[in-house]
Length: 189
Image (cartoon, rainbow, N blue to C red; front, side):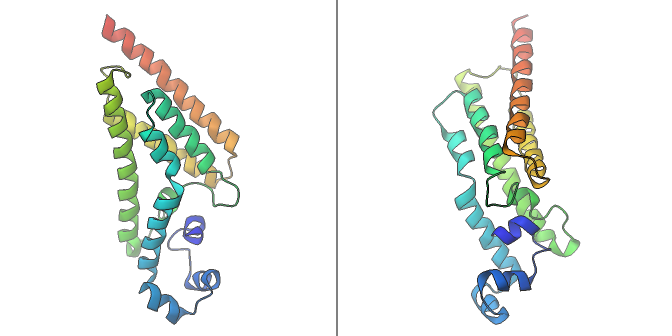
């Protein structure tokens, strides 16, 4: 998982996998059939072990603004964790995929779209509870938050520190607060 996370799907070679797992090529193929299957297992493992911060933030029994704050600050910490590759495997795993790896790129896109949908679901609940401006576009704001998180992932890959990523998160939260105030004021007019 860490090799794919650090190097991406295509740049992770069989030799790298062999060395990391201590297996011969026949043993790797017997256990996983092929590199694509191994990568999909790594994605499942990543989902199970590395995105708890997002699941916790989105399911927390708190106001929506607080859930969003936890989500973005959690991403800042998760994407810059010591001893782990920077960023998010779902973002960096196949951004520069060749046509031969299109199925992998599509699978990663599916994970990113599922994350965006989970954010939209949480925002829709917040809208229904009345803790978001009534004219807020749930889909648009979910896309914005997913875009901020994707950008944070890329920044982390480029070496941004946890504090720099937290600053990015706080800037996004401040922009949302200002926009929410504008929308609230215009709906009262």
